[in-house]
Structure formats: C-alpha cells, structure tokens
Image 1 (cartoon, rainbow, N blue to C red):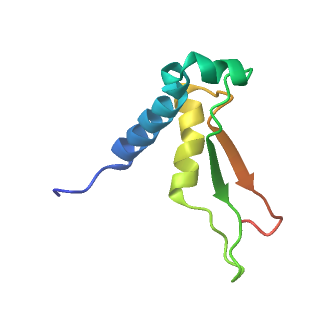
Image 2: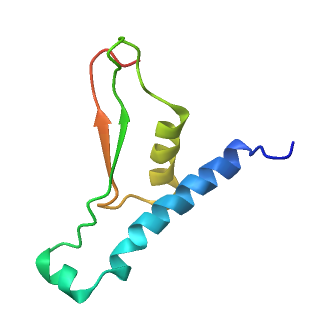
Length: 89
C-alpha cells in the first residue's frame, strides 16, 4: 500500500541514517578538530530501559539499530547506550 514500507526498507533507512551520522566528522572545521582528539561527534542513541509505570521501553527501532551494527559494522560513534535493568524482557 502507498505510504507504507517493508521491514527491509525501514532497516535500510536506519542503516543509511547511521552512515550519515558517521560522516559528520568530515564536515567539521579544522578549529573543531583542534579542540578534540579522537574525532568525537558526541552523538548518542539511547535504547531500552523502563518507564515509571514499570513497562519496558524496548522497541523494534532498538533492534533495528542493533541490526545496523551487523549490517555495516561497528564504529566508535554514534554511541549506543542501553538503559539496562534486570527487569527487561
């Protein structure tokens, strides 16, 4: 149907988005690079966790970001931060 995407297409969108985030460092000025060593971009994605109501906040998008690591490989950034609790499913 028009306006809907397959899971494969959505995964490709996420992969492409992460690739774009990884290229941000190439658009920076030399002055910025002189301030920080190691090419940090300070981009962090938080996933999972628990709400105040006790329900988990694990979503399909969390798994898509993890699949991206499998699809295009890991990288120092963007950082993936898992909000962990032993009550997660």
